[in-house]
Image (cartoon, rainbow, N blue to C red; front, top):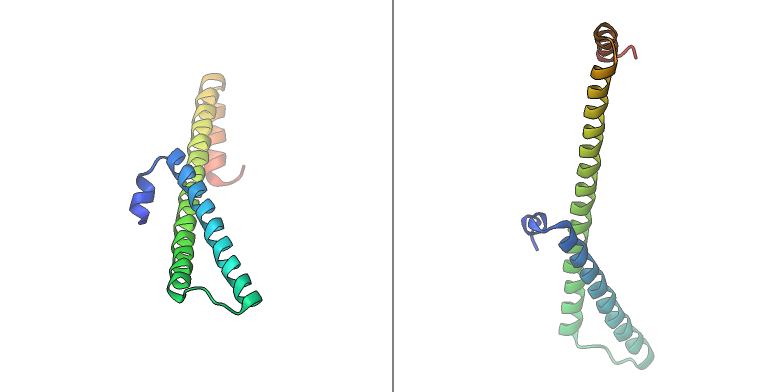
Length: 116
């Protein structure tokens, strides 16, 4: 899966995909662990092609999982920033409505100069 594909999915779809990949990783790890346990117990090793495919699948699934987590975190951060911008905008509008224009200008200059 490419990052462009991940970015094109809705947040809900990404969360579903994250859950599916997590489940897949758990299942593959369980199979690999069972094969290792069997090898330790009986000395009979799993098919090497199967083992290589399973380990590769874990690596790819892990990479996809991390990309999804990164995208979800970015979206949450962007949502928080947008909400904070909206609150700031509303606060400024409320100040403009309720404060004396001279006081508002004085406060604005003080904040810009960093003396607040």
